[in-house]
Image 1: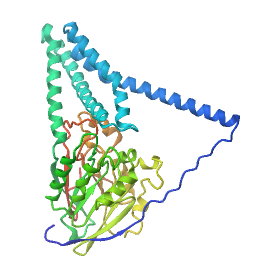
Image 2 (image 1 turned 180 degrees about the horizontal axis):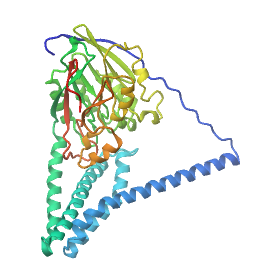
Image 3 (image 1 turned 90 degrees about the vertical axis):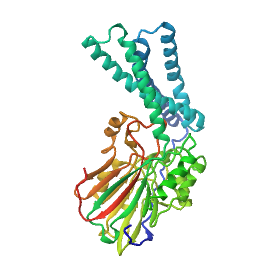
Image 4 (image 1 turned 120 degrees about the vertical axis):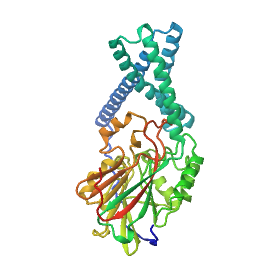
Length: 427
């Protein structure tokens, strides 16, 4: 960092307090029995609604590929029948595979098949819709003749196969390094040039990526980081399940600090266990707390909050609490906040945070899912400004969730170089 020697300062801040919830139990008798029956009825109706929504979604995903690739293309009957049978079999088996793979049993083999097939169907859905639109345009122009539908079907199949092959390679590779200067007007000159390396959404999961994890750690160490941030969604599964894949994080080096916050996926796989695991690996878990780092006589607060879903996880003391995260911090110091989801930025802006680092979006991961992500999040990727002071950097993520594909949404290891003083406005 420009020859300035940096050193870590003391950990400060406090963990989030939480009150255990209370449950009022009905007294034995008719009232309790009626309440129990009503509760069971409500759960049954809720389950039926969710099942209905799932059926609609699966049919909607399969209908365009079925029509574009098989029913509307005029193939011989055996081809039509085979394609229909494959899609029907997937629709029926997919929910069971997802439950087996991502439910209480956590069968990795079932999860791998379910996740991969979901990615394949999504790509086929997207390009079948586009192929059908192209077919309509060609028909309107009188181009293609009797073989037009078959030509479109073949083109869709080739494009989808090519994108899936390329997308799988993109998902499984060590991410490219993305470099960006971030100007923080309140940053002291002694910290000018501080390198913050960002990891997010590693999603260690059903596909064993221990070798990939080790190569990512090696790539980070080549970047000579002052601070390394892991912005959450470390894994799908428990620390015991993903112990080998997470182990290389213990080899990551940083001059000042290595900090970590929980993402939403930790709350499906022992969030407290992941906080403990990262502490075991030598990271500072920013569980609604902060640390202060110093360089050249200047200081920077590194704060972190739990994911916004933590409050509904049922874990005592887990919720996004910025007040606790900043407790005891000097308000005159610049603050870098790590919060898994970009949607936390209104709270950060209201508190006058200088820079928020987030992940979660994966940049959409498989185009055009980025447009759906944008409905839920204020930013899909990149640097943005929110209010007078706060900037937000949203990473596309280092790994992938579920389907082992990345299409037009490359993964990244990010190097944010912090610059003192005003600079070009964030976009």
